[in-house]
Image (tube, rainbow, N blue to C red; front, top):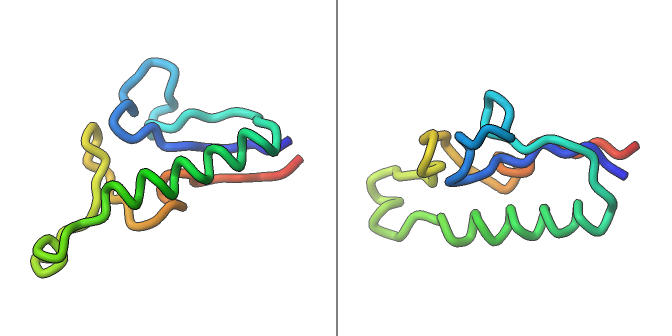
Length: 81
């Protein structure tokens, strides 16, 4: 089991998210791995283009405009219990 905080990119204003736009809770190891993979895929999809990098653009959550520099900005806290 692990406690996780996962930023709900694009859906962070939902009522079941905390004030930072995160879904928080306890998950099993299998679901923790799935969330880690989801964070990796989300960052890969949001990677700025070459032209975007020239203008120092970074990925942002489309809902709250939070800067997303790596997977750890999406899957923020993983504490094994």
